[in-house]
Length: 630
Ligand SMILES: *[C@@H]1O[C@H](CO)[C@@H](O)[C@H](O)[C@H]1NC(C)=O
Ligand SMILES: *[C@@H]1O[C@H](CO)[C@@H](O)[C@H](O)[C@H]1NC(C)=O
Ligand SMILES: *[C@@H]1O[C@H](CO)[C@@H](O)[C@H](O)[C@H]1NC(C)=O
Ligand SMILES: *[C@@H]1O[C@H](CO)[C@@H](O)[C@H](O)[C@H]1NC(C)=O
Ligand SMILES: *[C@@H]1O[C@H](CO)[C@@H](O)[C@H](O)[C@H]1NC(C)=O
Ligand SMILES: *[C@@H]1O[C@H](CO)[C@@H](O)[C@H](O)[C@H]1NC(C)=O
Ligand SMILES: *[C@@H]1O[C@H](CO)[C@@H](O)[C@H](O)[C@H]1NC(C)=O
Ligand SMILES: *[C@@H]1O[C@H](CO)[C@@H](O)[C@H](O)[C@H]1NC(C)=O
Image (tube, rainbow, N blue to C red; front, side, top):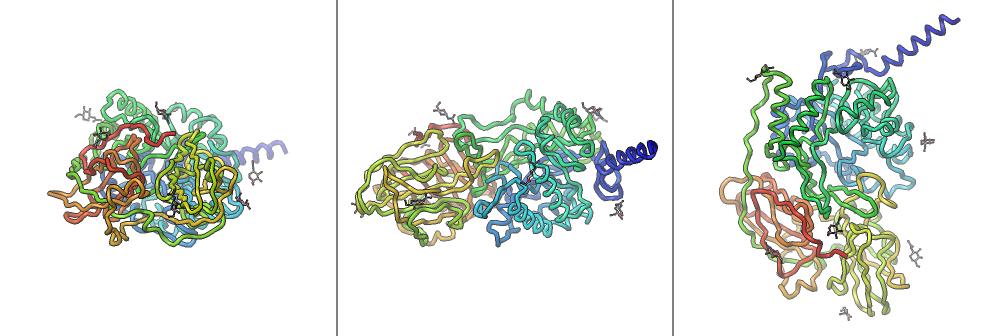
């Protein structure tokens, strides 16, 4: 008895130990200390680069630059909201053509680690979740919740349909997939993580290697791991590695991967901090090189966060939340080795030297790409062509306001209009709390700005007479991607609008997602006169420009333009905001042509005193006071 129970105990232990590793005859697998690609040890020298933040026209050259630095693997977040913009529609075209990105990676000799979420954080709108999730009854995201798991399954199954041929087991470059992202710093429900594991196996096949990735602290690891699934950590190498080995389930141990080695950090609007970068800082670069040399010599793997960050084109940016909203800027440069415009930095060169030194001089890498200097575009004549309030779509009518999501809208702006029926005076309360930045107008004259980036935001007191038209233009500045947004992620107006004691009844609601307003540029004919600007509400400005000489990237500078959105040839380049730190918008050369380029700007706060709009060679960073500060 004793012997057999001892034996079964030993067998049980043996089973437990081997169950941590996947079938050794698989194309990609791992043992206790190594990843194994076709049976050979494979050390991941990786970097993060997300397809949906890069113009697809540039994918090939960005991937080649990654390979030329010595990376062998690219880590890619997939943003769910971009591929499933509504419950019934899918978009795998353009920047969302994930399978194509993976194919191009393979062509230059790079493998892929898939980071498909469903929650990814990534400083992206709601961490990648589609806004329509908040409209589903009983939905609780990032939890063992039936509606959430059902929606996640639909997404993962559809994504798998796209990329199955790209899996390593089918001869493609996709080695493995991460489940969720840093769940251990958010929750601790293992049933949820196990349910997600099963969704991944169901979608991608149960021979796919899966892993979890958490902060390198004991609690994060304990909360985020799944028995039998490889547990990896983020952050600095050595401390995280030690913590993992101490706190992970034995069956979750395997080769160590630093899942996100932070090159620098993200930037936030109005943060009072300028652009975060170690470019031009040899001491800081030496420290990066030292960390990563240690990691390589330790026979461990890493992924640089970011190798190349790209741009939050359109309204892709997320936000932080702590008492107030701090939205992420349009640029996702991240101080990365390869800049937003694909420029080679001193960090890039130092890392390449380190990697070549480690791999040995016989390593052959593609040549370092030549830096393509951006071009300057002389001052573009911008004309105020049409008032936003003159080109509104058909409104939705209701007694009381409803939030953006109920109106079927995810991003952009919603205008709430009320015609005053009896005189009223007092403090304006626009629903339960401002979400996020509200421009308030009476008869199209701006009377206040309520901005939730401030914990104590402005108070707008109004005295309204019968017949006055109250407009509240609400901007969604990005749903919170990290940590909970209190109380929820809804945008627009939630709850009633009151002035003093009076609840305002009778609303017209205009949805302005502004996906591509340039398509309606034929309507942009009437010029708004300078004297009208004060009482016009937001105004679209338009300009036409040609490129003299070679077409390359540039950075648009809208000197002294307070806040708005820019499109060039129909491409939404993102938000600008005088507060900084970002002062220029990346305009990729692939969006330009020789003649007749159309630039359209939604200028939220027009005045007579705006500076020139021009393309500059170097990005400008800096902070300015907020003209609308409370
Ligand atoms: C390992 O994988 C191979 C190839 O998929 C399969 O034929 C074999 O049955 C698997 N072995 C085990 C023990 O699962
Ligand atoms: C996980 O969530 C499920 C469903 O909400 C719940 O029944 C279970 O008790 C939770 N588990 C833990 C460990 O909190
Ligand atoms: C930025 O600095 C200004 C002036 O010092 C201050 O009033 C404001 O609160 C600061 N904002 C943040 C987000 O720290
Ligand atoms: C890697 O580092 C860990 C933690 O310091 C150490 O325990 C391990 O022996 C090292 N492995 C190698 C191959 O150097
Ligand atoms: C690589 O080349 C450099 C410079 O030629 C030399 O100093 C170094 O020893 C070589 N390293 C290896 C591993 O061969
Ligand atoms: C606003 O416009 C309405 C309609 O033209 C008019 O009745 C009202 O007097 C105006 N209010 C102010 C303050 O100008
Ligand atoms: C808005 O006010 C109306 C009238 O007082 C009330 O019936 C309704 O429940 C209120 N809506 C909300 C969301 O509070
Ligand atoms: C921006 O505004 C400031 C203050 O009004 C002015 O000094 C500066 O010249 C303006 N810059 C441009 C480029 O128009």
